[in-house]
Image (cartoon, rainbow, N blue to C red; front, side, top):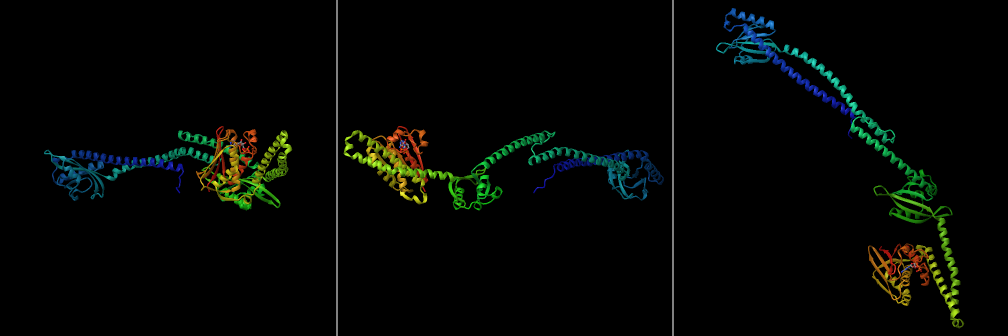
Length: 597
Ligand code: ADP
């Protein structure tokens, strides 16, 4: 992990360091300049002194006599003491003639000294070196005293100890160092202030951002002086306003949802992928006899022990939506029917995260439905027997010779027979529908793999007489290899109903076509006619009980209004689909879509 430094501790040392380094470089330059300056000044000084002294001695005077040497030595000492300079007079061959501080007679030959050699060549020689004679570092300047012929006959050398040169400089340097430290202190103070000035608004903004993060969005950031930081603070303030608004909206929506969720009469349970309860509403808690906090985190099978329910959950987990009625024995002798609907719980990335279950107590509703069905079945049964005898006796009466002669009586009897037949057809259909609705899927239906062509042929045989009466040709086109899992008699009933309708609503001398073909993973059985057709507005309600497009026509043709309702039920039982397409005046096509296994 990178260790992060405070902004202040990043700014301050850098400022300070840059300032101190530039100061140090300046001081170093000044020291070097001073050194160079003092050296050149001293050299010029020594050269001037050498020239001055050289005026003191005439070259012509010089002889190597003892008294003359003494005189030169005396002058040397005198001038040396007066000027604080060591003065040495040297002959061109290097012998020291006089020296202001030492006895010239014991001094070694100076010919090899670099300043002397340079002076003898006619220039000004200078050198800084350790003097063996005086045992200290000295600065030397030597000049040749020119003779008439131009050659130097004598060399005058002036020198001072280097220590004295640098001593004066040392004081100046010390002053500079003192100033340096003073400025460094000032720089430190200024850097400290500037760093704090830069870091403070950032620190304040950081504290503000932390407040925002903690959810305190009311107090806004104070805008700092600098433009960039001010616009940053402004942006953060705007962000906090938006955040505040969004949080309020989310809270409001959450409250609304919770209210809706809590006041629902249906029990709602959300489970994750492992069937662990994520959330539940009040109705679910009542239904399961547990409080919400007890339910959360528990597995569904811990709180609902029901085999059918567990199976339903397994199906729901693998599908987008599922629905089923499940019988629950909540308390002893309290059998309940719960309708369970499920929907996949999807997160914002579109991933499935669990399942939402809505449990609705439909016990009362189912009881009423059963009562209604039973009532319809019972009434039909009760009517059927007297109706059969009415129809039977009316038919018998019609055959009697007395009636045969009486045209009016015959007509009335025929009306009685026609209506008795119609009523009996309705009762047949009501009973059929009620039987299908009442049937136990497992016990009463026998699903087996059957050839589709066989069912079609069987339905055609049933409807043939009616078709023949109207000169209608029934054309079938079915691949004999096509099979489907079906309850044969139910499927036959559905196909008969569709074929009967096609014949019923077709004009005489027309054609009805039955086609069965596989494609798109389905087998589609189409019943196409060239009959009256159905206006589009009626199509959505066509499969409702007793719904007819044209009541009079249907009645006249002997329709019961229940044919398509029966077809719908049969198709649903098989898990198939039915589709209608029709053009009024041209014909209709009813398609049964059977998904291939
Ligand atoms: P019905 O016994 O009256 O025919 P159905 O339930 O079989 O009752 O049909 C409902 C209504 O749908 C019919 O009354 C009729 O108006 C319409 N219908 C059904 N099949 C066809 C068809 N092949 N052509 C035109 N109309 C049809």
